[in-house]
Image 1: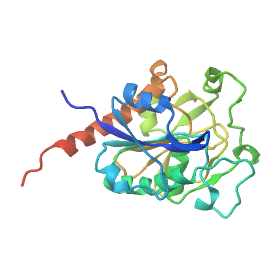
Image 2: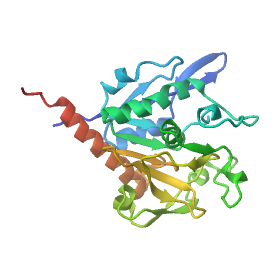
Image 3: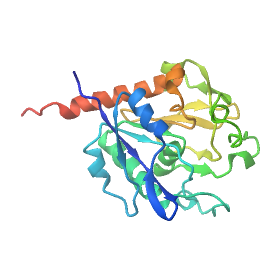
Length: 254
């Protein structure tokens, strides 16, 4: 029986009491196990960061997760950050270089929410810091006072691009959750739109030249075993990771 693929998950740096910790939401770890059929390997976010090559030589896939923090805006614009905006410089230092390195190495990537934004920024795109303040765009934030099942419940429809990765999983349209304040302003070169919200905001993309690089703005990790569309996203990611694992573990012949 083939070994499950190893899937790297960069962590957040978060303060608990007087000490900084590295942490990642358990829902992402469970999604790697239950949805992608992989073994999660947590990689600490440090500044200066560890060498991306160390992780990429070890893993068969990379999951960039959501987080409570946002990317520091100096990475994509000259706009100041807004008061109260939470940042994680150690995560920025870890994940932004990792995106390009993983792409060059052919490592399959699935990027969720903050991870979706990280891919766009790492490849030269820009972000709206406050989507809800942009004329013509919806308020994509969750009600933080609502129960979790409401926060992560269906929020709006996304239209899936014909012939895309997501259309193969979910058809033409799907209901998704929405828990983000930032969003894509300018899509990075070589990223292809996979899904849009009713207001036209890009909600998913793939990389035109990658074996597998899919980014989604919503949270497919949430109770994916109860949602065929979300489960299908992680299954497609897991299939790409297993394909890489087979190549990586095959003996080289002269």
